[in-house]
Length: 271
Ligand SMILES: [Ca+2]
Image 1 (cartoon, rainbow, N blue to C red):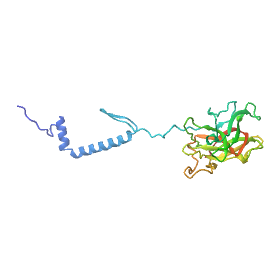
Image 2 (spheres, rainbow, N blue to C red):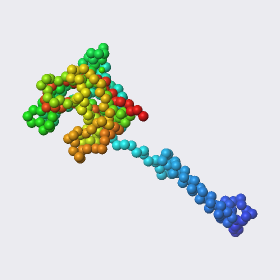
Image 3 (cartoon, protein in one colour):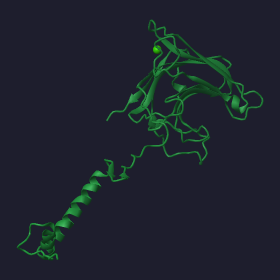
Image 4 (cartoon, protein in one colour):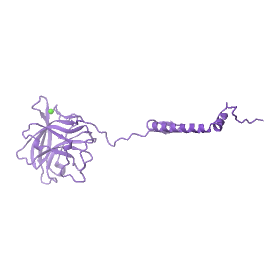
C-alpha cells in the first residue's frame, strides 16, 4: 500500500512542493512575475520582429519586405552630360541620340546629325543637327518640326535630376534665307505627362544666326508646358525627380538649315 504524501512547507525539495508553495504562498508574486515576463517578451517581439526571422517549431515568422517604388530604379545622370570630345556623336553616358520628326502627323520634315570639329578647340567636336522642315499637303499639326532626343535611363527608366537646378549648353544655328518663322526649343519629359505636353523653353532669340556658339542657361523653374496643352494634360509643375528624356528641336512653317550643340550640362543646385 502506497502512502499519499501532501506537500508541506517543510518539504520544499520536490517540484510538486515548489509549485504548491507558489500557489499557496506566492500567488501575488507569481502573477506579477508572469505579467512582467509577458510584457517584456511582447515588447522585445515588437522590436525584433521587423528585423529578424523567427522560427518556433514548424512555424516561421518573416519580417515584412521593405516597400520599394514601382518600376525600374531611377539613376542620377552626370552633370557633364554631353561635350562631344571625340568624333562619336553620343552623350557622356554612352547613350545615343535619336531623331524625330512630324512624319507621324503626315508631315514631311527630315533630320540627321553628325559631329563636326570644334574650330576653337583642337580635337574637340560639336554636334551638328541638320534639318529640313516641310509640312507637306496633309500635315495634321500646325507647325513642321524635327529634332533629336536622348533617353536619360534607357530603355524605360527615368533619372532623378533633383540635385540639379537647370540645364546649360552652347548653341548656334544657320538657316536658309527662305526659312520662315523657325523657333528652337529644348524640353525635358516627365513620364507621367500625356500627349507629349512636356515642359519646354524656346531659345530662338538667344541664338546667333551666323553659326557661332553662344552659352545658354535654362533654369528648370522656367520650363513650361506648350501653349497647346489641354487642361487634362496640364500638371502643376515640372517634376525633377523623374525625367526620362531630353530633346532639342526646331519647328516652323518651312525651311532648312542646321543647329549646333555642345557642352550640355546639368547645373548643380546651390543649397
Ligand atoms: Ca565639344
